[in-house]
Each structure stands twice: as C-alpha cells, then as structure tokens.
Figure 1: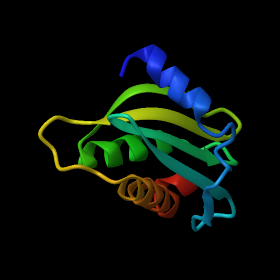
Figure 2 (figure 1 turned 45 degrees about the horizontal axis):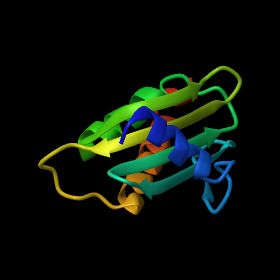
Figure 3 (figure 1 turned 120 degrees about the vertical axis):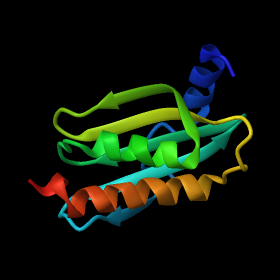
Length: 120
C-alpha cells in the first residue's frame, strides 16, 4: 500500500478517533481513546489521551515492535494532549495479527506507562 493509498484509507476512516471506539480509563484521571481498524495489509491506529504524555510514544512503539508491526506512516502530536494516527503493517513471515490484538497491546502500553514514569 503506497502513501497515497494510506492517506486515502485514513480519509475514509471515521473522522474522529472517538467514533466506534471504546474509551477506557488508565490509572490516571485522563481518558484514553484507542481505535484500531484493519485496512489492506495492515492497521490504522488512532490513540488520543487528553493530556501531555511524555514517554507514551516510546511505550506504544515498543508494543508495536513486540507484535512485529512496522510503522509505515504516522502523525503525532504530543504538546497539549497526545494524539497518534499511525499506519502499521505486519512484518513478512509473522503470524497474522487481528485488530483487537493490536488494540489490546496499545491499551496495555498506556496502562503500563500510566503506572510508571508517566506519572512523574
């Protein structure tokens, strides 16, 4: 999937990461919204946390790496709040991953971040 196709898939995706996604509370007072959609040969991943989140991006990228998911394109904002929209593709030769597995891994990364140095 080329860059143009990824942008088209992203444009066809719901405009807000809040659409059809389930919010969950990390052990902070902030609500995280995680939405993962299957697209051709990969996933469109949207994450939103209503506060600045130093270190969270690293945790999420580590979760992707553990799953064997390569990030081909990403838009990230970490100033006032944390917003991530990424296109991830499964690495060749790896077991097929389901969108729910990716979503759970991102949620777990957020939870671990919030329970550790994300609170300082």
